[in-house]
Length: 447
Image (tube, rainbow, N blue to C red):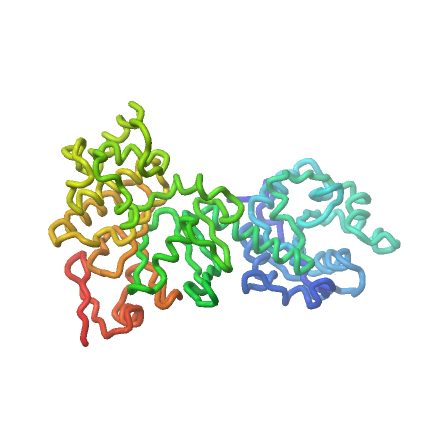
């Protein structure tokens, strides 16, 4: 997109990167956010405009503050229009620049954003403002406030929604706040995000430093041996086990700051623990209907609307013929499908399948996995997370794998790059060869 409405070849971006960050206790270019120097964050944002980018890390005349950097930039470029950025603001994005440049139509000298009554970065100056800059440098009022006033630059009140991207990061506390803001932005774009999650019980580590992000459009497999920590990880995600350290977001909500009892209604769970709690006399239709509020052993009869919705889900899970059959006489495969229908009753955005094939005979397992494949390929369906220790249960619909050993992440990422013989052998601590059987996988163990 051409961001300059006047002259697309006239603009240049100048990043003022000199000086010492006193409150950080180090030079500005050396300060990092998420392991990347501030200057690289700002440079990447600047390059999105398409104008030449110039980093001003040493002023022509020292000791003049930001005005010295502006004077140096004007001496080092012939551009008629300059966009000035500060390396103290790594969260800048293109949207801010677009809105700022649009304000230029109403000014002959430049545009300054205004936050809390004060002008600041990022700002635009035309070369015609140089004479006003010189006036400021020849007085004791060497500040951006003075330059904005002398040049009669346009003042743009920044929309509140953009305030976070315009924050100056000058202290360790500012840096922590920026990290938290970035985490929240990532979480809002993800189905689930886990950062540094650890769980200890009686000083015994169960999970250690788990990092894991599930994005929309991805279908994940959690792979690990018995006792590796898979169940504890699920318990943390569903809010039944409190983390000792770290952070957890699900569907944009952060654990500890949101009501996880309500959030659970948006997270479907199919596990053996739920299967064992179902009333034996309850008909399949009522079992599915009980998923509306994620309640087991409900009193009374479901409403007509819930029964109508449950019948549709019975059809979806291909079990219409089981409508009136009690739980006690259902096969294991039928029970798993009914539990999936029950989980879908609340229209979850995330569906966790905890070893759903346990107890199924080979034929029932294949039929069940075929059903999961169809569910995963449904564009309107939930994001799937399959927990298993059998690679044979990983159907083509699953795009990503996280492999856990002794409470730690051994590997994670796209399935085709992550799921291999080496990682599989390390996960299960055995010599395992992974073989492809068409679209499915199998593992050959050498003892």
